[in-house]
Image (cartoon, rainbow, N blue to C red; front, side, top):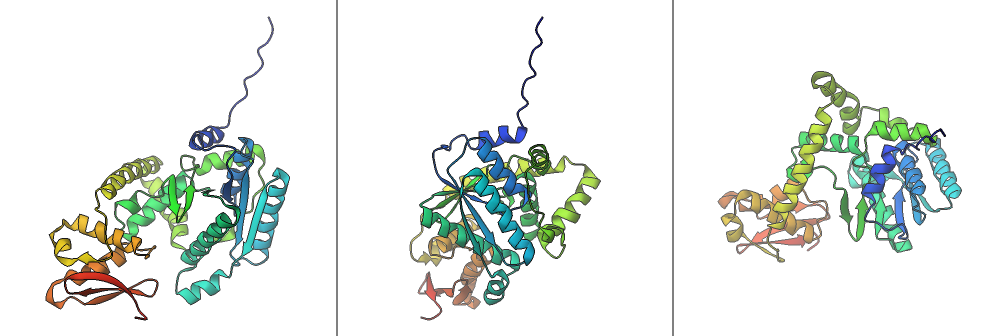
Length: 325
C-alpha cells in the first residue's frame, strides 16, 4: 500500500493574515510601513508569501539610534530589493522636532511617521497602508489608554481599519500574537533588527510591556490578555454605534443646545466639532477645555487649543479662532 505524502502544514500566521486581507485585491498597490524590527519584517515577508507583489515599502529613520538606524535602513533595503519591491526611505530629526513642538519623543516620532506615510501615499497615489501592530500591541494600547483615563474610544484600542486623512490604515496582524510572529520569524528565518530602545523603561509603553503585563500575568495568569482583547472588541463596536448617534455639527456651537444635552452626548458633539474644525489630535483634554466655557457666570470666555487655535464663547455661541486674530 503506497504511503501517503505528509500534508504541508500551513503557518497559523499566514492563515490569520490571509483572512484579514481577504477583502483586499493582490493587484492593488499598498504602502507597507517597515521599521526593520521583527514585526514589520515578518509582515512584509508573509504578505509577499501570500502573493501581494504590488507593495511599496516605507522606511523612516527617526535619527535616534545613530549607526544602528543606518543598519536598519540597509536591512529593509536589501529585503525590498530581494522581493523586487519599490521602497521609499527618509530620515527625520525627531529629537529636534520634539523639542520645537514641546512633545514627547514618542508623540514626535508618531507625527513624523504619519507625515512620511502621507507623503509617500501622495507621491505614489496609494490610498492604503499596512502596519504590523499585533494582538499584544493591542493589549498594551488598551491598558495604556485605561491608565490615561480614556473613554470608550481609547479603551477599544486600535481599529483593524482606520483613517489618516485620505489614507486608510490596515492592521492585518491584530489577531496575531507576538509569540506567533516570533514562531514565523524562526521558521522562515526572517532577518530583522532588534531595537535596543524597546528595552528601555523610560518610556511608559515599555514599562507596561516589560513590568506591568508580566506582573499581571504572574498574578492572574495569561488569560487576562484575551479578556482585554474581548473587552476592546465590545467597546469598539459600542463606540462606533454611539458615534453614529452624534448629530452633524456646524461652524458654531449653541451653548443653549449643548447645555440641554446629556453630558455624554455633549462631549461627543464637542469632540466631533473640534476634529471637523481641524483640531485633528483633539481628545479628552481639548473637549473638556471647550466644555469649561459652559461653566456658568465664572466660566472663561476663551480657551487655548492645539495648532495655534482657541475656542471662544460670545453671544451664546462657541466658535474657533486663530490666536493671530
